[in-house]
Image 1 (cartoon, helix red, strand yellow):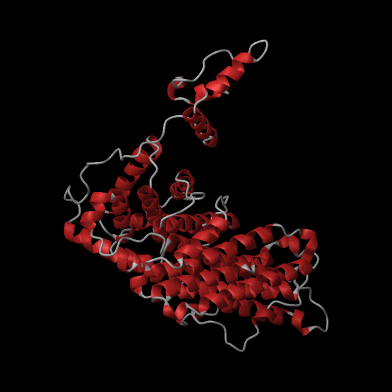
Image 2 (image 1 turned 180 degrees about the vertical axis):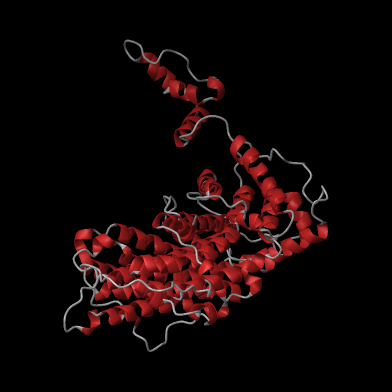
Amino acid sequence: MSQLVALSQPNGHTSPGTSTAPLTTHDGASSRDADADLGSTDIAAMLDAAKDSSHGLDPPTGSALAGQPTIVERGLLSAAEAERLVASFQRDFVLTFPFVVLAHGETAARLRAREPFLFLCVVAATIGSAHPLRKTVAEEIMKHVTCRVVERSERNLELLRGLLVHCAWYSYPAEKNHPRLLLLIQFCVSMVHDLGLHRKPALSSDEQRALLGTFWVSIGVCGTLDRPITMKHDGRTEECLAKIASAEHPSDRWIAPFIRLESFLVTMEEVYASVQASGGRILVQITRGALQRQLDSLRADIEKDLPSYPSSTANSIRIEIKHAELRLEALSLREDLWTAEPASAIRTTMLMDLIQRSQELIRTVSHLPVSEIAQISITTTAHVCAAVGFVPTAVFALLRLITTTPITPGNPATNDSATESQVQAVVDAADYPNLITELANALDTQFEGMSTAAKEADVTGSLCLKMRLLARCYPYQIRAVVGSAAAAAAVPPAAVATAPSQPAASGQDMSMMAVDAADEAPITMPPPQVWLSVYGDLDDIFPVDDIQWDSLLSNFTGFG
């Protein structure tokens, strides 16, 4: 035991009164004598060492960049504009991400003096994509991350809160598969544990918000990108939710709906991942039905309070609800679950519901006030991308079922005319080119005056460019799936270009558009004389092969 105490002392030195005699003698006397010599100080040190499984030097508590001039002091950003941006964050941005709040009456001058990294991240979130300082501010943030978080292993609440703000409104630079964003989110998760927020007996309000915010961002983004989710909804999460609901800041009562909806998504994904192909339609019905009841109860509990929330907050929560609703239908896309009944009425209903729920989410975002567009968080952006990717995926699944219907003598539902009618109904109901063009137009309001190259460097700007490309490639993919004649019939002259985006008629039974199909030989149809463009111009449509289309669509189904 005395040897263990010696090892617990700094630099291997023993404390006064600690025996350095051999551990044992032939009769064990030395060991007993050493143990008897242990003082209370030595025992306390030994117990502390046993509690701490780590070793080495403690990370620094001060900032390596302390005292360096800020972007305001260097003349890059005026003091007046800094105050305006901090005020905008407090007034507007907290409404859609209530996990980092500033003290009442906080000023930019005080914030940059006390928490310079958090100040930088607030500026980056509020400055706007078209601002000439966007790149400079992003580089300053990464300078702090590299020097303080990576090189010096600094860990403190300011860094965690700043990283959360930066991740929540991450926009620059846009990268394929988002490696930097994912790394920053992992830093947040790691810092939560390094600071002991997952086990400390008592957390401050800021610590509780930071823990819950890390949970929301990490699950929302990593789940969409199909990355491992390391944070769990556990007892500490529930404890923080209970305490934060009665905290001092008004926005704290908006936190619970965000967390509970994200927790439901985690549960649903885990349950769906466990569904075996052998279960087939029956298991899908039972599983989906149970989850639907859970979501209905959760939605009813949340929606009763929405009228009392600010518009931005209520809209963000509605988008989260829409995302949960469309995810409920995701099993309809798993082909291995439907081998026995590929065109089951249950499946076709789920596919049409998936299209409708995705449309509702997209239209909710498209119709947001311009002032709210810039406040959209990265998690909401990820959910929008999922909806953009789900619509054509579900459409093509339905069209494959329709076009593999065997022609049965005496059954009018299987003749050429009926098949073309069903194809047309599905394509018209989806209205995909108009749907995503309207969304791109709404999101593009952030990028006025920016070049194409500058938009490509922005996460949302890049997605807008790709959405416009999807709209131009989609008609050729329709033709590839259903055959030339059916595709030509499904896109009437200039109809999509001139008609406003509208949901299907309320009395229309969308679930019956693709029923009574079976997995047999496809119908062959004569080629069309012309392939009509949704823009009225044949040259304005991009022909792409399946590989190119899948690559383009992966920007949304995998969020880049």
